[in-house]
Length: 464
Image 1 (cartoon, helix red, strand yellow):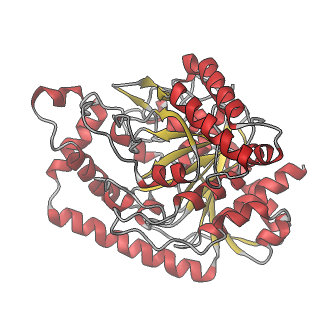
Image 2 (cartoon, rainbow, N blue to C red):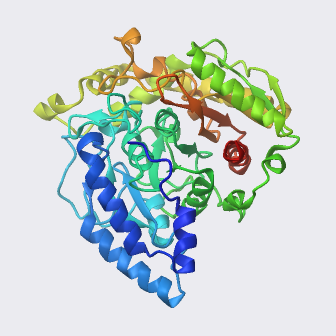
Image 3 (tube, rainbow, N blue to C red):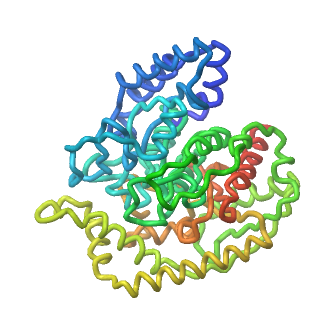
């Protein structure tokens, strides 16, 4: 059911400019694909068919006048249902979320995409409050992977990943507090980047604090760069947002020589990031991707940054955030929570301020360690996830029953602690035909460098 041949946003925009296609046709194709795939995948919690059709007609009229609104005018886009979308409730996969309200503003990322001309076709599923790295919730049920519907697309941006991988939309928004863009990108065979924290403004502020990043999820690296540049623009509601990047982030997509993209880069390959268990098929695919970068002229060395096991400290920050996010839910409504979420809320309530500050101290130590590491290496490569997608509806694969999702997400959540840009780009398949993702990590603010390496791998793969 996955559709890697579906048109990219870049292809659609070129067709619009040439008069070979219109936004109306693109939106109708997206809606038709949603109709066909939704009964199996359950990637959308809200489909905005008539609203999208009206927006597509307005976009088509602009293209006919030669006056596109912005760099994404007429591109169908899906929005993860933790982002505000003007005129519609944001329920975050929870039976406890309020339905009533004005719902009169967009989140910053959505506002920037709207200004760029994106056409919103719907909102995508998420686990309750985006708390785990798979996608099922009491509100929307189980979301499934287009490559094999018996398996999970990952999470928490699993609905967005499934929608993109299935060809319903070329682009979708995601959030990432511990791997929630990169894990579903890896499991679903698409591209996703967790940008440097603060590059994409955030509002309302996440209860998970500065662990939570917003980023793009697409089928191609060029689309990821295009979408990220549109999203990474200022918003006065985020007091901690970074200054916008220098113009040209999207220019990564215009470069067609893979050697030129990575030649001379010093790249570290850490196959296990200090000893994490990895499926041999994933290890082989990651090693092959590293070899490709070396063949393109990068200097690839096996090296490990020596990060500590920060899972207990990540739990302090993450579980405290879950407790904060649910503090206004009282009485019998608390019985409506996902049972796993309810458990981490109770743990989060038990932490002290001293526990929180101790976790933050380790976080700062990790950031300093990675800063020093990147004086020697321009990029770090690891698996994006230790194995391919597993059974849908489970928090962990059977061999890890009884554990929390963080036990198998050790390649991703450390880089939420350090706030670095980190992307997942497809690099192969398991023998079961499930995608494998390579994680490319850069120093803070090196988002364009991360995307350049991803683009080089994509171009090298196209040549084959």
